[in-house]
Length: 319
Ligand code: XMP
Image (tube, rainbow, N blue to C red):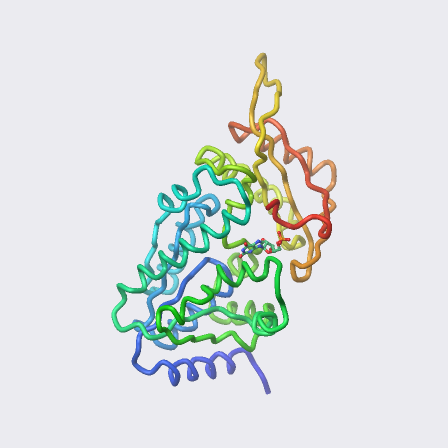
């Protein structure tokens, strides 16, 4: 009979058979798929694996540190923390078009990954967290955001360009099976249950031009919002939730003074696969309390909107 434990052993043996004594590189994003892929590979081939975590400066509050710490402390795998935020934010300066942002980030991601990969001696394989639905989709799906997801997250086109062969241990699995495998491999529950996070990160939650100031405000506000959701026991009820900083300032009053600060949009949706989504019906009490907390705790925000658009006609992200 079928158990995840037996499947894990089987996959480890398959990886060893495929890779032999060659070296493997793996791009970790902090998401479930790449995390499970990295841990599985590490279990199979240990020191032959090097993981690269590309930090594009568009991650959430303390996210890079948390991801790197989790892998180094719990798994002891070889991990390069590629802090390239200066490069990414520099290239994005003055750019406000959503697709241009994605293209710049996607291209730099590949350049950076390639640069680090070239330094790893004898790497012949690239490990990817491709899931079964991705395998199907890449055949039948054309157009739309999933293509972008693939070209960014799964480092599309890169293996051929670098002359690398692919290792894709999750190719037969669905998302819930990957989560079960992650559990089996000792990945913390807080990691397994994380909401999806887009490859371009906060860039597409900052409509218009991206500035360091806006990113800093957004990070703090998003952290307060997610904290509120967790405190109310709603995190696992929601498919994806995040804050976005709007490209405008509005007038407010605080104490005796007038403020002129950024407005923020809060988003929360339920969905099965991200293709369609319903906005999440928070209570007014929750929304009011969250708005008050954000404005009190985050300097630079004086107005909070809740986005009650479903998909379609809206998209989940604001860009
Ligand atoms: P949209 O905004 O298209 O989002 O309704 C659907 C799901 O896809 C994620 N998303 C992306 N993920 N690169 C990614 O890796 C992208 O460019 C991208 N755009 C959207 C989004 O977070 C949601 O889960």
